[in-house]
Image (spheres, one colour):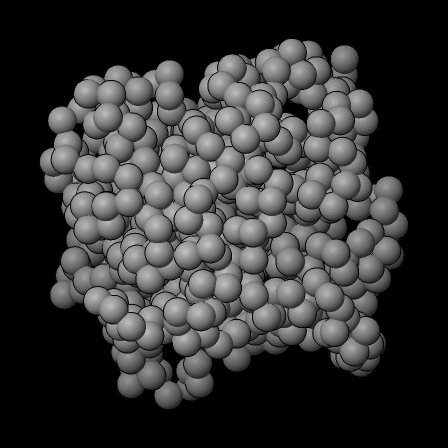
Length: 590
């Protein structure tokens, strides 16, 4: 099978050894790399009930057959493990330039087990792994750590023209449950705490370099296909919208739908929307569009604050999800302060979605008097101070660092906390977008919007947001296609362009294997089953697929919307039937 290096790197940090193992064609044919391959390896090697921060939990980095080829959008890598935030299946993805240089090391996957006796950084090249002392980098923030890795490789590896540096910050070192892995300064494998797992293994950074190229089935046809695809779609209205406004455009779109989560999920609109939306960002910051490798959308916003106390601060961002958490849930009323809080999280190496949700929960707890902590909505400096406490695991930050499943009961706020399986939702309120409620519930990693991106289907009225009949069937089709995206590994924002027909064509010219939609959906279904098997081994039940009670019982003030529990139960029943799972979400027919 073309498109793969057909080998993976197995690293044991407890022994400071590595091995290179072959990947047979039969396995690659049924997994397609990326998520499929990594999930297979997790099931095969992770003991049931393993401590997510223990030595036996595997941390797997995986690429797909389109990585470092001419295929548009093939510029991401995936990381997979058992989550310290949820206790269940963990997957996260990051873009930028890293995936291309990771690929040139010549491995389809890298699996890490064990724990180093002292902090290390790992150099990965076509020959395997080299272990380096990282004690002098301990405590460094993410940007500086990345600079250190790249400078060392540039100075000491003359054959390495360019490299990838995947790093953690203080949050990962201190094993904050929602710590991230970062690359290219502002790109993050952001959700479910892979950075904490990396920190638990005493890894401060991983550098990749090499000169390996994928042996694709038809290089000329891939290049021709890419040229045709780019010419046909670069001026598509959707591509232009991302290039011109980036994901912050979703602030206005979700506000118009009364589904912009505000004041810790008590409202669907923010009165200060116009000071935190895409227009505000472009007016009050110097903004340049910025693209990942092999991407014509350039959705990234390289933003520099023009005036005020944060003048000169530069980040790539903020993305919509960061604006919703700090601007909506925490009620920060200006875009410059959101840029600042984004920068704080990036430097510390913690997820902005979970961090913002937790801070907003603390604000609610302070108002109710269940915790004595001087903070209120919109208080940027106090929010930043709490983020620092979380990353350092100091004061109130110590309990918050464990994630919402543990923190909410400790704050006496379990009945108010918004999460599924321990992961907080993205900025799409399921009381309005009921398919997103099903997506949040059934996602193997918790309340995730990216496993289906079904908000697009509901916002554009491909199916009515309130409709229950037939919703699970459509959602499973979307989810299956996104699973194939994550095997290849492709960027989500190409979802409008890569339908099933385009995916089969890409796979054929890259791998040489002829597939149709039916076969791809069968592969996707088996991968979905494998993520379910992983979670069932970790104690998952149907109750873990349900939404927080507030979504069932607390109407949005703007619309009166709730998602009745009976409707969620119907959606779950329909979803399980589509997946051929049993009534309680167990594996098997019926």
